[in-house]
Image 1 (cartoon, rainbow, N blue to C red):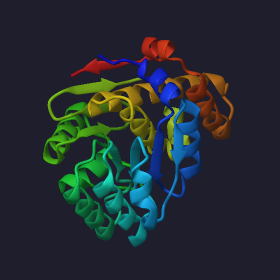
Image 2 (image 1 turned 120 degrees about the vertical axis):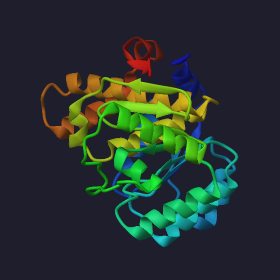
Image 3 (image 1 turned 135 degrees about the vertical axis):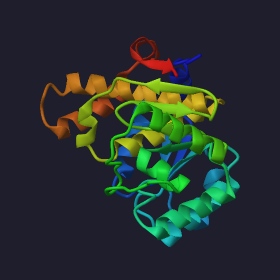
Image 4 (image 1 turned 180 degrees about the vertical axis):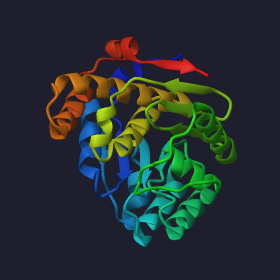
Length: 264
C-alpha cells in the first residue's frame, strides 16, 4: 500500500511546491524540498498567487506568522489551485483572530491534507485547543488523539496528519500510526512546518492524499532517526543539518525498509 518509490518519482519529476510560508521556517522548508528532489517556490504576494498556482504541483499554506495580506494570499491560492493543497494552521488557537481567519479559509475550500498537532486540531473543532506558542503542551492518550483526528477529518472531508511522538494519519475511515523518529526533533524549530512541506511533495505525485501524508510522516521519522545517528550526540545545530543530509540521501528502498507504519 505504501509505495516509497514515489520518492523516486519526486526526484524524476521535480514538482514545483509553492509554499506560503512561516517566516521563521521558510529557509529550512525550501532546503528540505530541494533535498528530497522537489523545486520550492516561496512566493508571498497576493498579486501573483493565481499565476503561481497555475504552474505548481502542490501548494503548502502555513499560518505560523500571519497577517491580513498572508491570509488574503492563502484564500487566493485555495480558490485558484487545481492541485493538492496542504494547510498547516500553525498556532491556530493562539488568538481569536487567527482562529477566525483559519476557519474562514477552511470554509472556502477543502485542503487535500490538514497537518496539525493535537492543540491545533482541538482548536479547529472548538474543543480544548489551549496552546503554548505553536506547540501542543498537553499529553493525551492514543485513543483521544485518534478520535480527535478522525473527527476533524470527517468534519472537514480531508486527510489529517496529527503529528507528535507518534503520528496519526486518517481520512476519517482509515487510520495509521507512524512511529520511530527522534525526540531531538523538539530541539529544532519548524520540524512540523517541514513535515507539511513533505506532505505537499508526496501529494504532488501520490493521488491518495492520506497515503501521501503517511509517506511524508514515515519518511520524516526515518530521517529523524538517521539524523540522530549522523549528528553523533553533538548539539541541535548539527542535528538540524543532519536532518537535511538524511532527507537528501535516503533512498526509496531504505525508507520502505525502515518505515514504521501500522493500521489502527
